[in-house]
Amino acid sequence: MMNNKNFSKILVHIAARWTLIFLALEVIFFSVFGTNYFSLRNLQNILLASTTVALLATGETFVIITGGIDLSVGFMVGFSGVICAKVMVTLQAAGASQAVAISSGILAALLLGLVPGLVNGLLVAKLRVPPFIATFGMLGIAYGFAEIISNNVPIMGLPTSVGSIGHGYLIYWLPGKIFAFLQKPENLTRLELQNLVSIIPNVTVITAIVIGIFAFILARTKFGQHTYAIGGSMDAAERAGINVKRHLIKVYMISSFFASLAGVTYVLRFITGRAPAGSARLLDAVVAVVIGGASLYGGTGTILGTVIGVLIIGALEIGLVNLAIPTYNLYIAVGCILIFAVLVDQFFPELVRKE
Image (cartoon, rainbow, N blue to C red; front, top):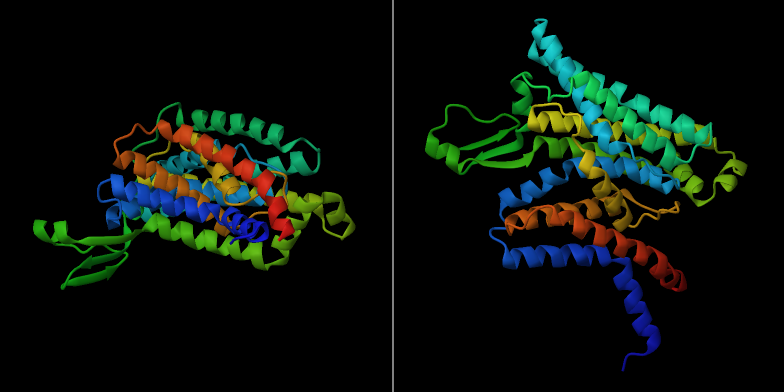
């Protein structure tokens, strides 16, 4: 017969792995009640739907581990996306090649996208402005500038190669005939196009590489150790010789970089720049970090946990579409998951410490 001690250990193990269990149950549910949920196309749709949230949530993870929060990342997507698209269109009209226009647009978006993060970091670290207020103010500033740059309309007419990159895949496979990387085979018949299998979207590859690099930085480098130390106790981190102010500035710039990269991937996918792009993804990003195991009080969290949280939201979003359920129900579900995750964060850590 199971005693109370063994039962408590089982509860601890379940609590520590509830996100994986939840994701598995989610996939099983939609596989049973949905249509072709386990198909390659549907799984890749989940990856595509998760791209923006994954980038925003990765940057948010660094900030939340330090005990802060960045509310500006949603509208930073639109800000950087508008800059990216505007530079591409302008250079193309000036006679620049598509390669120059596209690369310049991406570079401009990533560089200028660091400025809001720098300002956020200075406000939080140097002027002691609460992160909620500093980044909430930057939210409005980023959105306003995005609307000014775009003249309140989506920026269209981008170079044609933008769509080729954003809609491209890493691997193209025609069973028994063709196996190609990066470039879609040409001169295929209609039947061959129907049978062509496209595997792993380009934007997913880019996202995975960048997230992998920063996951290593957080988990294996001194920068990551200092990030956790600041979240655990800012005073103790200062006494240990960590330059807390400079580190916080870097952390908010990392968050801004990921939001800018999300804006670039948005342009590549939708071949347009829109000021409101990404505005609805802030909640998803924060929820993904929290359900991934990061505490809003700081000091804990991992990129792997965040990625699992992102997949939970992505699988839920595509699952609702698969069942023809209105997607606004996603907000209700995500809100409920957030509340549940916070409750787990408050109650189950005591059980973990007992273990």
